[in-house]
Structure formats: structure tokens, C-alpha cells
Image (cartoon, rainbow, N blue to C red; front, side):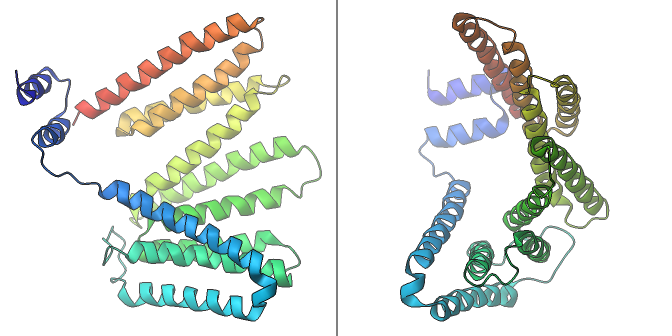
Length: 314
């Protein structure tokens, strides 16, 4: 029995979806396949590593090279990046538009990281705003939001949302007491705000394909806040109830809209939070180890089964 025959049998029995069958059949025949996504991830990661190395170089040799030279180099690189993106960008549209070239998104991403690096260097060296980093973060978030919507770039949108989260965090950190509780409430408020903002923008047909980025980040921030509350020995019940409600909502959304990540969020974060509460009542390393072995294996099997079911359904 050949590999293709076996693949055809698995397709007919429902083990493989038509898309999976087509990919595996091409691989079995030695046909080329796309690694575009993998290369994209590596290139974006490479840019991030390069900026980190550039930041280390700037920090190390700032005294030898001087502020004027370093700022001139950073400003010239930033100006070149922005000039390239604005001069080659297609006309703005509310709908999704493809990038004009293969390098366009990388240059834009590189420029955004350069902006962050230069602002950090300016404040560190000259203290223009007397250490008020929240103002830098807020202005950076606004700038990145405008670039993300102008050039239709989800990576820049994620940078904008991260900068906005940092601004929230620094603002809350100035509260005088109950830091842990404040940060959890801040996280919940932040997740609700960006969810509502993303939904409203999508409802008005303003880059509706960005909604997934808003909801995925909001879900992770919300779940992290709720799960952290379940680790408290005192007062964990409200956080556990909130986590269960959030898991139910995430599961319903994922099943209704065929979004597997939200199903996985409900399963994984729910498992962590419930386990944190249950383990506190257990005694003995053997019992705890047995619990995580059995329940962890069951959770893994369940997620794999759900993922395969999502993959088979059109």
C-alpha cells in the first residue's frame, strides 16, 4: 500500500481534512511547499534581535561616540525608514490591503523599534520629561496606532497595544497601596477597553480584520489577571468565579466563531486556575504529582482532539 493510498483512506474516514491531505500528498511526492510564514517569523525576530544589539551598542559606546553622533545616526535611520514606507505605501483603505513589496512590513517594523530606542536614549541621557515614562508610552502608543491603521500592519498594532498597556501599568504603579490588587483591576480594565475599542472599530468597518489582534491580547491579559488572583490563599474565590465565567465566554466565542485559540485559552487558563485552588488542599508530593500527571495528560489529549476536530471541519 502506497503513502498516497493511505492518505486517501485517512481523508475518506475524516482523519485528514482536504487541506491536510493536499499538503501531505505534495510532500510525499517531493513537491515544494511554502515556508513563507516561517521565514516571516524569523525575519521579524531577526529585526528584534538587531534592535536589541543596537541598543546594547548605543549604551556601551555612548560616551566614546557622543550623544550628537548617536542621535544623528538613529534619527537618519528612522527618517529613512519612514520615508520609505510613506513613499511606497498604497492609498489608505478601510479594508485589508496587501503590502506593496516583500520588505515593506519589515522596514516599517524596523522604524517603529528605532523610534522606541531613540526615545529611550533621549530620556535616559537628557531627562526631558523628568522620568515620566508614561508620557513617552502614551505618545508612542498613539504614533504606532496611526501607523498600524495607515499601513495595515498587525505587528505595529501589537506594538501600539503593548505601549498602551505599559502606560496603564506605569499609571497604576503610582497608586499608594494594594499594588497586586490594583494591577489585576488595571489588567481587567485594560482588556475590557481594548476589546470594546476593537469591536467598535470593526463594527464601523475600520480595519475589521484587526479585531482578532485586539481580542487575543485582551483575552490573555484578562486570563493572566484572573489566574494570578486564584493563587492567593485568602480571597481567591471571587477570582476563581471570575475565571470560570471568562473561560465559559471564551469557549462559547471560540466554538461559535471557529476560533481555536479562544478554546485553548479557556482550557489552559481554566486548568491552571482551578489547579491552583485544588492543590492547596492536597498533602504529599505523591498526590500532587499524581494529580498533575493524570489531569495534565487528560488536558493535553482534550486539546489535541479539539484541534483535530477544528482542522477537519471546513
